[in-house]
Amino acid sequence: MTEKPTFVLPSGPLFGQRIATLWGVPLYAAYGSNMDPAQMLKRAPHSPLAGSGWLMDWRLTFGGEDYGWEGALATIVEQPGSQVFTVLYDVSPEDEKNLDNWEGAELGMHKKLRLMVQTLDGPVLAWLYVLDAYEGGLPSARYLGVMADAAEAAGAPEDYVEKLRKRPCHNVGPGSPREL
Image: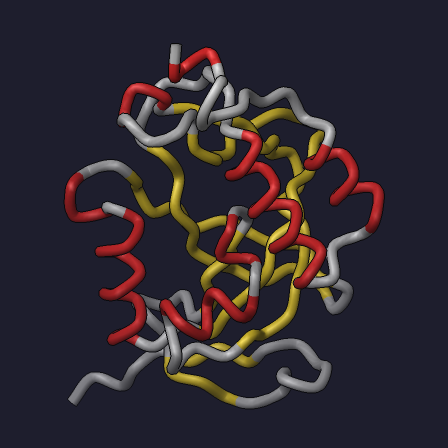
């Protein structure tokens, strides 16, 4: 019988325990609205918060405006010198399937990548969703607000949250250019 791979998380209140892994990578790194622990509790109720960290040499951007939502969706692209705040969750196999459905992974909207996330306790390997679409377009003000609120709820640095709130966006709703 083949033994499941295990991973020992570095340290901290939720760390130091041995956990079974998903294809060798136990942690999901959220950088969009899933940074919000309350939202993740609804979407992935069996997947505890495991910490936070930074994707180094990656940049938060938006794309896929043509998918038909209010505007462009969050994604990341490689860019030396940039960094993206992430929240880490220990996602159960059941919750991973739910997240795949929620994120449209089975429809090809998102791909999964495995990347190193820098934490205060050192680097950890995590998986995340990346939009499978062109980079460009503006997010809606509502979506950007949800992301900034999620980052704030997860304990992101104030300057990071403020930069999210000040990003270019467009309004949607009555009286907005999209309604005319």
